[in-house]
Image 1 (cartoon, rainbow, N blue to C red):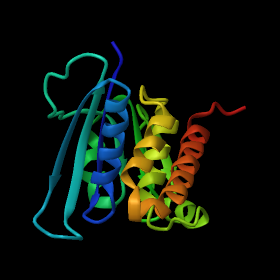
Image 2 (image 1 turned 180 degrees about the vertical axis):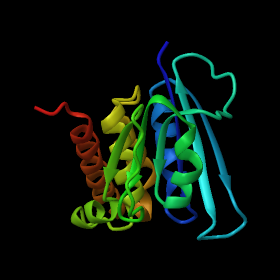
Image 3 (image 1 turned 90 degrees about the vertical axis):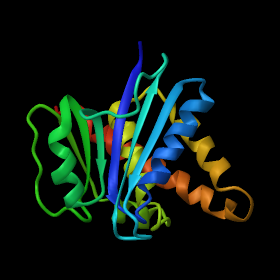
Length: 187
């Protein structure tokens, strides 16, 4: 059985729900079982927002996961709340643009990504969420192919929003490269 689950968290407006939706849509397009469980406060922007995405090649028993294999965090409150819930051997992707302190877990892979810098370099400063999603995909070699996520981006950013797709895909790809670099053996 192949399966994975990831919690993506940040402030409302940082795009974590969209990143989770793109991952879920890509997995569904690949014929996989998916659950997408968002949680957010009543604020339009600035409140808490997170999403749990479960992907499997078998039916998913429950979308509610209390211990996660993956964590993507945009801000310090999310890291402090959810970091301890990652299972040993899990992957934690930390946005160093907003989290200015070190976070260590001896039993997990911690990937540090300056999502803001990478997104700006990709000329997609609003795509920091896609940089982070890419870093998670690159670090985990998840069961969802990168190309399926790119296709989900193209479908999401279609019509009048189509002009955002190329830069969004560039941001995703640069994030993938960051994630891969973080897990390469040293030496």
